Amino acid sequence: MRITEVSGGPPDRRIPDRPSGPAVPRLVLGERLRKLREAQYISRREAGEAIRVSGENIAQLEGGHRGFTERDVADLLTIYGVADEAERATLQVLAEQSNQPGWWNTYSDVVPDWFRTYLGLEQAADVIRTYEVQFIPGLLQTPQYARAVIALGHPGAPAAQISRRVELRMQRQRVLHSRQPPHLWAVIDEAALRRPVGGRETMRGQIQHLVAMCDLPHVTVHLMPFEAGGHAAAGGPVTLIRMPERELPDLIYLEQLIGASYPAEREEVDHYRHVVDRLVTDAAPARQTRSLLLGMLEEMQYS
Image 1 (cartoon, rainbow, N blue to C red):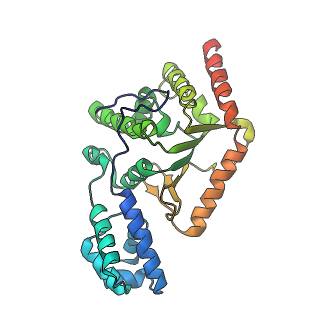
Image 2 (image 1 turned 30 degrees about the horizontal axis):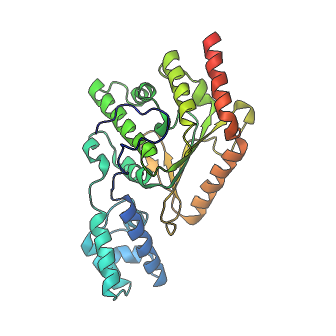
Image 3 (image 1 turned 180 degrees about the vertical axis):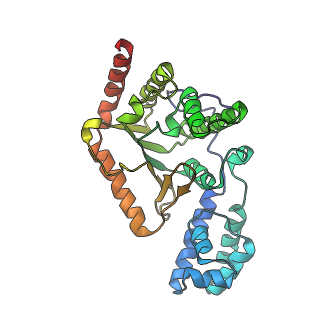
């Protein structure tokens, strides 16, 4: 089913469950192998040397950023002293699943490698907490606003490619209208709402869409007003993802202009979790969001 626009209102029961993909198998397998490695006091470098890859590759595998070959999993399990056949078989199945194509595979022409991991995480998440300073979060954008933002980031790109990127963004939004949607907890800087991306009418439509999205029980939007002054994430956007599998750690996604990073060390994750918590505390209460947005629409009408 092709979706070109998502509107506010209750979740559309016609939309199927979230598409399956390799994100969760990669995370579960990576976390299990990390614990097995640490239990044997084996470093990432040592594990990498045993299967002829770098320690950085082991870090990426354990973090769920890439799939495992079944041979590498078998070798690592032997190195880690796992002899139980049932456990080996379970982890080998996860290795096979970790290399299945993601739902975004049909958009591979417009999805950079660094973004593929995030697409899988977003669709599998239980909670998505995000802060944006420049733009409205992608999951809350209208098609018109998304087109304007994408055109800014890809000047000179053919119209057909821009349309493909907009379509991908709209496909991502289906997760909020699935049978079991994640809870999206977004903090949006006032600057993103005051900047007329795409022109006055596009911005008016975008703010109206935000008002409608605030009616969804699983969408919470806070606005970070100018009067808040400096705050914990003034340097750029940050997203924290929590998976339904409670044994998995929270994941951090930091997007830059032409790349992204996924801080994975416990201290880094704790730091960014604290940043996100502070953002919610510093922002206006969510119960005020609707009235603040309606006030902005009224200002636009009379200015």
